[in-house]
Image (cartoon, rainbow, N blue to C red):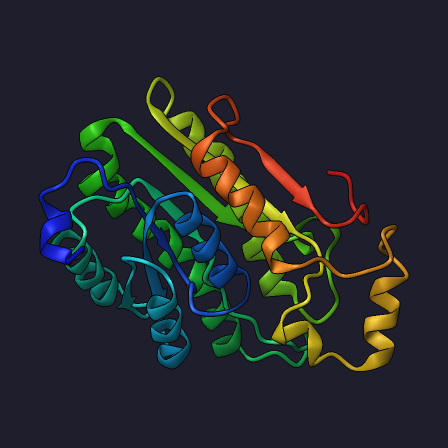
Length: 250
């Protein structure tokens, strides 16, 4: 099915996953495609992996944008309108991190991390305005993190942004009261991705010691929860769902 054919269809549900080319984002793309969604795989720099994923999934498409740029987000919305015509599910997964203690972190590094929160807010605003509010339905799923609740040394801006995503979900769900637009967060624990595989062995061992299940999670275990929220969770709203093997109960 071509993009043009889909634009005229009211039956093809569309999901946009930011940071969809790798890790948890890619797993979410696969899970939503398995649920019958046409998936928009957003990326900023991982073009090769995003295009490879698009080739794997039936009837998906790739879109690029730097979510710290207002102009890029404006262009992204225009492209989504042309390629898909609708967004039924928005998964705000993209993030950025700089590891450094507070006293040595530069202001530019802080701004680079915090800028993702601004981009998430602006993208969500435009998706609501241009797509979801017009049909009074939709699902917004924010991927936060366990460290937004437990804290993590050397990641203060990142933990601030992730905690803010959970507050964003709760506040936005109240602003959208009375509409069939549900907003929730999924807060992963430590997940076995390229990022965690690069951790030194002693740090990985220390993390595992804090997890009652004794292992890191898999990206597909996060994606399963996202797919449930996107399709079957009709009475879950303004909630943070923790998926962390028992290391934090919320």
